[in-house]
Image (cartoon, rainbow, N blue to C red):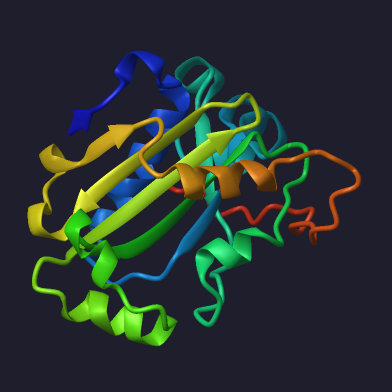
Length: 201
């Protein structure tokens, strides 16, 4: 794996993002978008001891780490970026992460992309230099960010690229879901975060 800015990365967040990416990589490609709550592992051990024990977690081994809890599957009719605009998290959620697969085109193709959204998607799918990429991006309430990218054309763990600002637009959307502004009119996420933690691959 290539780290673009390892000195600036939050180790707990980076570890959680890479665990999510590694776990999903075992399922291959063409997977739906996913959303995860990131919770403090020590808090999980305190409040869900049976669940933590089943995962092999304890205070001594997981102090300072984050556990990823997968949320209900997002509607396939709504793009991840749009779904994030209506999500906010309860206080016990320290951060969140999202996973999405996208087609990436070379920079010189930008001027050729049609204005019509349907035609633009077709153009991207049929472009001979397109690249399939899986993006795993995460943020915390403390302002940390981390991303992991895997190209379908280089589908091995050593080729995963990691960094703190690889997909700034998606990171900004994720950060907005953690906004604690009471005037925020977005729909809250369920108060009971689904207890389906991402297990280590």
